[in-house]
Length: 247
Image 1 (cartoon, rainbow, N blue to C red):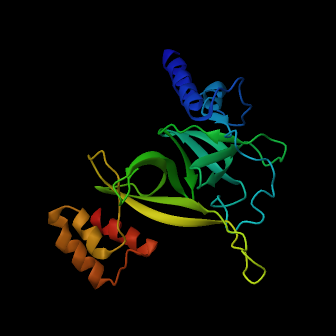
Image 2: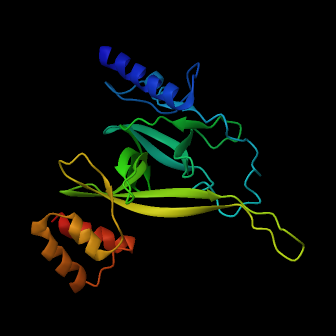
Image 3: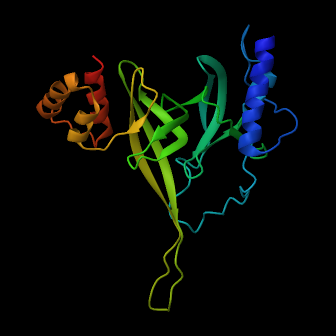
C-alpha cells in the first residue's frame, strides 16, 4: 500500500511539472490485476493536453505535412515497467514530443498527454516507445521518445522520429507563388551499449557505425556489412547489423 501511494505521488508530480496542475481523476478502461496499478494510479500517468493545443481540426489544413506521425488515433498497449496496463488509443505529436492518449475513439472524449515518466511505454509497430535521454550527433543532450528496435544483447538500437516546422512566406507579388508553412519529418537512430548510461545517435554510414562498437567487434562487423551488401541507411539493414553484433 505504501509503495502504491508513493507511485501515485511520483507520477502526479511528473504530470504537474510537464503539463500544469490537473484536478480530478480520469475515467479509464485500463484495469490492473492483483498487486498491479489501480485505476487511480493509472489515471495519474495521464495529464491534460498542452494548453496551447487548438481544438480546430482545420488548424493545419493549409500546411504541408503534419506534426503527427499519423493523424489518426491507433490502439496500443500501455506498460509501466514490465506491467501491462491494458489497451488505449494514441497518436504521436513528433513536433512537440508528446504522446496524445484517449480511452476510446469518441470525438467528444478529452485528449490527454502521457506522463513523461521513463517507466511508461507504449507499443508502436510492435516496439516499445518510451521517454528517454539521448545525445545527438551534434552533441546535444535531449529528452524525447525513442522506440526500441533491438533491445536484447550488448548493443541496443533505438529509433527517433521528430518533426520540424518551417514557416511559409507570402507571395511578394502576383508573379511569384506563396510558400506554404510545412512540417518536415526526420528519422534518427541511436545506440546504447549494455552497462553504459549513455544513448548516442548513429551517423548513417557503415564506417561510422563500425567505429562506435568495441574494437574487438569492428573487423567482424566491417566484414559482415561488406559480405552481405548491407547499407545502414536502410533500417532493415541496420537492424541486421545489430542482430549480428548481438549474436
